[in-house]
Length: 184
Image (tube, helix red, strand yellow):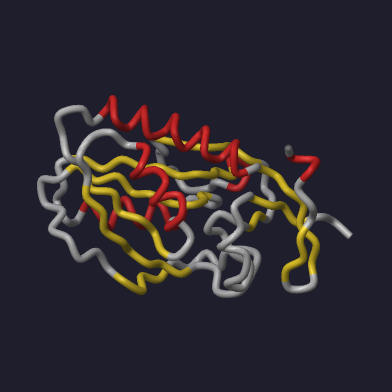
């Protein structure tokens, strides 16, 4: 399947397929089953990180068999760049009451881990019953923050990726596959 997916161009750069929609959906289903088993008899609230995690969050919620709620938080650490600035800013806070609730922070990608560490620390201030983390992608080689990830879809190299919610200057979020930047 991967060989049959053509390369794409975004912002004048070429990207080749890295993970197909089928691979992504299989792994999201597995994560949903893991979360369902871990939260049996409970009602977690998934807090999605905008904008990138919206597609992963929607598919993950459909794969979870226990009742669950949803809310969103929005951070900025990239702007239009391909690398993180290292400075995390909160642009939208959570609206739900998280006190005494089981919270699962849902992120599209963890690279340095600084945003996830910020999220874990921020959510802890709401006094939830528990805080877990879920990410579709983790760049293990780029992670510098000491943050534990409970649910990881795929561990990837330190690659620039787009698609399935991930963007390059706001483009590419709508793509069903995940693509990597091809070296020129």
